[in-house]
Image (cartoon, rainbow, N blue to C red; front, side, top):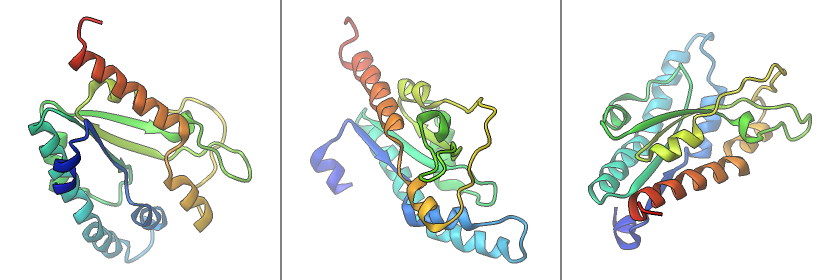
Length: 178
């Protein structure tokens, strides 16, 4: 919070850590021992989730915005840290498929779905990010270290959508007559 307090950004984006995303991608529900692996992975997530909760509380208190990325994976319960953020009256939920924002396999060019959940204080950002795949094409799996690392980054079009939504929030909050 010291860094946020010093800089006072109008928007804080919490992007899911790359190393944790790689671990999440390797998790398979159907193998023995995965429940234990999911539990260990959940413990690795905890500091990120706690930080996200603290940032959301701080930003709300100072009437500024936050955006939290949460990968969708049924194997891992993200727990109480984000449940209190998600259930807050002024939190908006969006679900994105990254293929809609141009994510493609680096070699084959096939779309990669990578479904992600977003928690935000901005309804405008939520609208921009709430885009789901409707294409009938086969999607490339997120398999292999290079592909996992490649898909951990946000596609350019997705960052543009975040900025477009944030622009709408700024106009609504600070320039309501324009």
